[in-house]
Length: 358
Ligand SMILES: Cc1ncc(COP(=O)(O)O)c(C=O)c1O
Image 1 (spheres, rainbow, N blue to C red):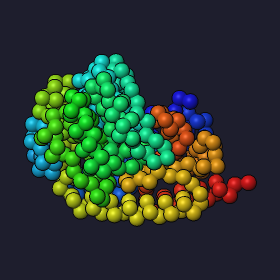
Image 2: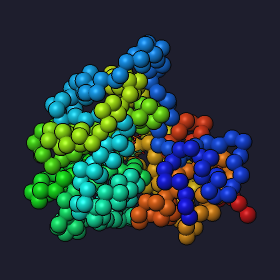
Image 3: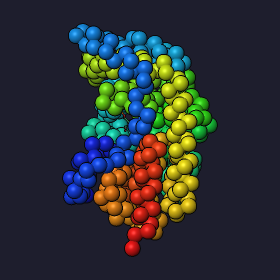
């Protein structure tokens, strides 16, 4: 099945599935903050207009200064990107031809960019019953690797591996001269996150990637950043177009990072909605991943694969994210974003209809 590679833009999934688009649909396929961008961004938007007739700051100095403060790393260890996706693409170029281990399931762009750069790709599949990795098994897999990709919190499961587990992996990789890329695109949806960012100062093989498009609901603007040893940042910069990140994105980023209350409000809201959804799933007999962020995997254990459920939902105007391009999942689960109370209620109504169908 040649389905779209990512969530969002639901018209493509309807076309590919050959299902007529209903008049209204709810897009649960993209895991973006349902509260929308911060109000402060809207308030400043008109001022930003005055800035667009000049080139953006290619060094993104003001935004970097803010990030340095938040993350406890030096400005020289920060690279701003046109979305986390651009930074992943740059990493692919820097690690071209290397042996890469991807801890799966994970964001599909890692594999895509590694393939484009002739890397040799290896997988470590997380065990579906607990979504954990065995340390001994992992240690064996690390033999002969140059680079490891880990998504934490994990996309698509939403599970977060705690500080102690990550630090062990960082140390193991450091001992073996392996670059560890930890993609923290969704870290700010966690309520109990312990930052690994200061470890960039100590471990020169640690690379941390963050997206600003999820929490601050600005995927249309494109903004992300990377934290790593200064030499890696310099190398990546040589591959990046000079004005890659536009002025609106840079200014928006500065406003967003000042808005701690917005993040706090979001995480509380997401937790409340997540608990409501999960208690419904338990009652109705759906299996789900114990996510700690703003999306989760779901399946009906009575179905062998979830294609019928996927089609049923699409016909009812609910658009989940398929999992055919997540190695190890291959359609056995569907991924859903947590959205507004009303949209989550509609999802639960449709899932009830599914259970009660003749
Ligand atoms: C885990 C993960 N990392 C990075 C990205 C890239 O996000 P963006 O390019 O919008 O910053 C995504 C987008 O879906 C993602 O899921």
